[in-house]
Amino acid sequence: MDELKSLEQIPIPEGLEERLSKKIDEWEREEKQTARRILLPRALRYTAVAASIALVFGVGFHYLRQNEPVNLAEQDTYQDPVKAQQEAERALNLLALNLNKGMGHLERAKALSEKTEQTLNEQLKALK
Amino acid sequence: MIKALFCTVLAMVSFTANAQVKAFEKYADMKDVTYVFISKYMLGLASKNATPSIPKVDINTLKNKLTGIQIIHSEKKGMRKKLKSDVQEILDRDKYEVLMQVKEDNNNVNIFHCVNKRQSAVVMLVEEDSGITAIVFSGKFNIEDVMKMVQE
Image (tube, rainbow over all chains, first blue to last red; front, side):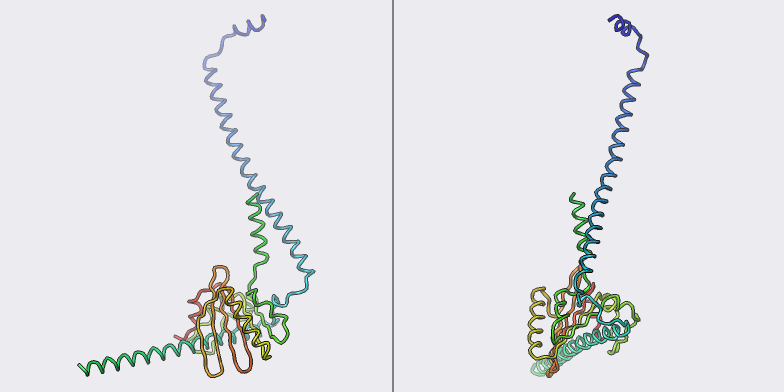
């Protein structure tokens, strides 16, 4: 009890309260910064988990597919790029040929329609 | 957790993504049907400069955007009918639109297209006396790229 009384009698240094509150504010700021720093590793952790899951699935999928019978549709028919190129060009040329055939008919129809319109206009003018 | 799931789904989708029109894959091991598949890899291996048989026609624009070409052909009478109705069913289901129809003598050509963000496709169905051929061009292109094949 006497000790407490003697402690109370010790004079408080000037500006101690201000310095203390400043220090508390500083600690608070530091605490907030650390919390922000923690957030980033958390996001990274999620990404790492997602990447690991994807990797496990990927490796599993790859091994499963190795055991599956080969899907013919996914295999290139030609092993020789030149032959593949020739076939591709043949297909593309056939598409171009048919597109041009269709457009040719369209052009002819357009020309015929223009000619008919012209003749009709001439006849109408002659009637007037 | 949602992010993790999203990443997983994205990874799975990328593993299963394909360069060709899946619906036409079933003809690969069908009897009396010839199936040809040319991948983007094979298209890219050979020379970049295709030589068009029609002058003033640009086939390179489309060719460079292709990820695969599938050619399905049959000469057997019964199979021709089946192939035609099968292809028509795929075209109806996947909402293909008619781009052009050309009928000359005994030659009937129908060209359909389906333009999507992920994968576009042009299907040319050629019916002749000798047989039926469906050619499927798939890749990332638009209708303008196809129409560049029309003679200037």
